[in-house]
Image (tube, rainbow over all chains, first blue to last red; front, side):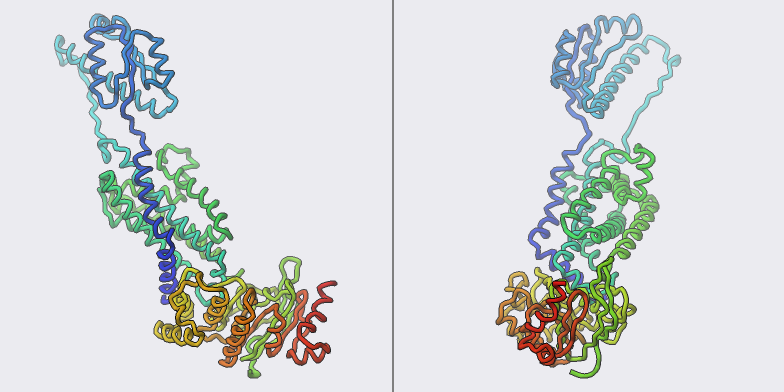
Length: 372
Length: 246
């Protein structure tokens, strides 16, 4: 036990003495938060619309004013010419074109219905989808207004309308930052764990101090624990720092238990650090290790569901995620922060991450040799 | 020096694939002895020293160090030895005192003892002023002396020195050997490899290796007499060279 304390003390002296590391530990979270959180967004505001209004009736104007009343749309241009509208779409001057045909108003009243056409720029499929959905919402809204107006002339009992009213739970304003910030924290903690600990071991290999340690009676588990504890603490401190920044910069909600999040994060970091120590036994130079970790982090984070829900990934990918520690953390941190999930909700994930941790630590102990 | 054997090696063989690095080495080293392990580059010295210090497993043969079998009790062996290799091995970003504290702690020395001994050690080396200096900022000669001092800080039975004076100036080398003598006087067995033949003359006994085999073992005086040479350098050239040119 005393040996471990001496080793841990040494690690901390080295970390805080390193001008680069001691700054990077706090610099990296700031940069990640400030740049990545606001940048990653699927939220669409200011959708620019060009309207071709061939009708110029009270009804068409009503529809257009509905559009203007929405937060999502900006009426960029109104024209009578199809060609002009198409050109605008083509030149990226607008995102959507709404065609209102001639006699739109009359047909609605006399014939009970008419069609409008919406053209969307779908270079970015997901934003086009969203813009189209918002537009449909506006049109439906207008539609039900019409319905209500017309109902006045008919006995209401004959018409049954199902009204859907929707509320978005856990993130009512669909603030994308609330969704991304936990994800960025996952990247942060993963990178700290994998990079710092692994590079530290490989550096000892390069300088020859690892060989010196190997001729001492130090035990394998002492070595592993001494490498684990400092970076576990740094990871947790960085997580706390990231949460504070999130609160200050983006007023991120935190609905669950901080203690639970830190408990889970500790298990997660142990799993990741075990992996780092395992990978470090496979590389003899720091560039080799960086190369290895680059791919590991990329695969883990991309597969973890940071941008896209893991449930919509192919089956094999979902199976892969059962051994991807980042997938567990990504799910749990969002559950705790946004949904306020408690211990019982995340218990299966805690069990999973502990199993992964046992796996990676065992691999590290197995691969770390005191002999050459 | 006593008759007690602290290193017993019998028919030690180490193979890397088809290459035989150590070919049936047999020798004993006595307590308090300064044992020189000579040989040209690639003769197999470092391989042997790594086996003796438990860093590497032999392919076959019997090896006992400090009374422990190297196969079964490698970790016990490590408790009783010190080691200083060619590659510099103190932490460059720690201070002198922090390095001593770390290694003392690893060998289970009580904190108080470490502090007291650090003081006396630095005084005896005249290094008191370096206590709080970062190792990386110190000249090589001072670092080598400190590395040796750290290697014997926990009072090991044996200390293995693998080319400890490489790249060091002659004055520092002389001082380094004074430290070695003092350690030997204190009862520490010294097992040292070197390329400097004048250093070989300082040893109680030397073994000369070539191509994985030990060609001869004896005191420098006996070897010189046996081969009719004025110096160990001459002996070395006579017996180690033919094998190299085979």
